[in-house]
Length: 242
Ligand code: F6R
Image (cartoon, rainbow, N blue to C red):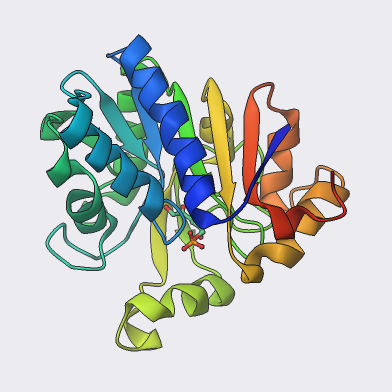
């Protein structure tokens, strides 16, 4: 795992955005793996700005998001489809038909998971996957204990994850209890992964990630087995790990 130290959130976002933009310029048909949450917002802002200013085109780009809540429609302001439309897709010339998220409203959720994997495969896999880090070490919504062999599946969200995401909802009761997430094996098939870590609340889990063995109780630890992972984290979080 390559480690890049960023001075602050802005620099972390800048470094990751630059990597994505370089990739799209050199390979316009890139397939991106995308995350939601607070961490990638600065990256998405920069991708939109760059596209407006410099004309970087996403017409041939495809995207696959990591996850979606079960039971929230695309129009629900807390659905990940809504988040992606608002924060990224609406600011780019991307073809909406090439943007994929699991359908959390699907009648047959198991079938939806199988189809999502098939779409990913048909698209030729992910070139660059953006990942945030959960405070409990999750990647996507793969909570501690998820088998490393897992593919896209339905998960029961951890209480700690629902608490962490409660800030986006009016009350804890409104936070969905289930989600569809790409599995750990699906994530590990990405050709390149950018793991982004920012904020004091991530200090403990980042230290654990850097120090502990590769174990299923710490899902992100699997990334140490991937040949092309760059961890971009704020400098203070990395102190003692140079
Ligand atoms: C989001 C996702 C999650 C988040 C993680 C960190 O699509 O899959 O794994 O990346 O929970 O969230 P933030 O960035 O809000 O701290």
